[in-house]
Image 1: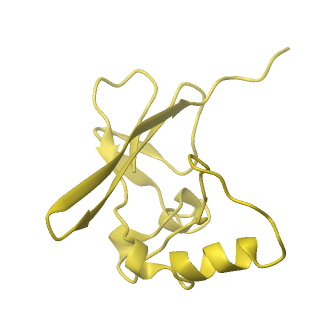
Image 2: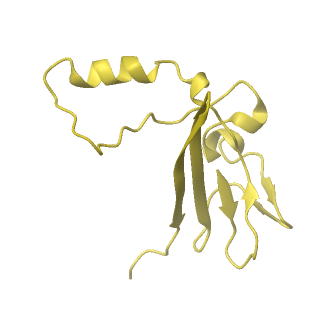
Length: 116
């Protein structure tokens, strides 16, 4: 996960995590989802929620990374405790195995100010 602060040219990597840090495996999550008859179709997306690892650089969300806003993150000459208007959050991911690499691609979201 990267954050690109408003007005900055470059983004900063703020965390890296791994599916191995999930409490429930993807197989268990799939079983839980479908056991009562909820069908899945090709192309459905499953969200795991926050994936936090044991190391400080593998915490899964900004609230954890900043200790509930008590500790600022350093991002290319600026700091953040919380996201601000104009900031961008960039997610990338992939699954790797023996002889394959399946990419999630890039998902970018920009924080916009509220409407008047």
